[in-house]
Length: 121
Image (cartoon, rainbow, N blue to C red; front, side, top):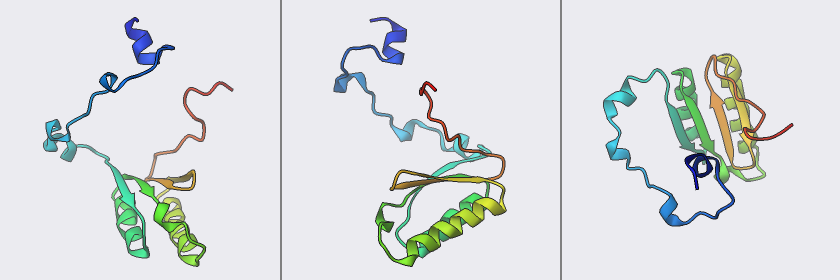
């Protein structure tokens, strides 16, 4: 199997040996501090969690929020989603809900494509 077949995925099945676990300790913290933008991962379980997400967006960072714990029928879910939508609008960012369990919120100047990569139209 050639290099491109390995990268693009040939018809052969994958095994555990085909994957390499990345060690985050190998990444220099100073290079992350110098970055103009960061991507944050958040778990949203209550109204208080939305405050940290809003702060990150106002600071110019991207947030991928796990909203699995919000799958309830009460008004809290809609209130949090509306707050995050308002923040995205205020900073001229973008917001999209990915399935039932994730939201992606971006700051000024970052748009989220609604088209999946690798999909033929």
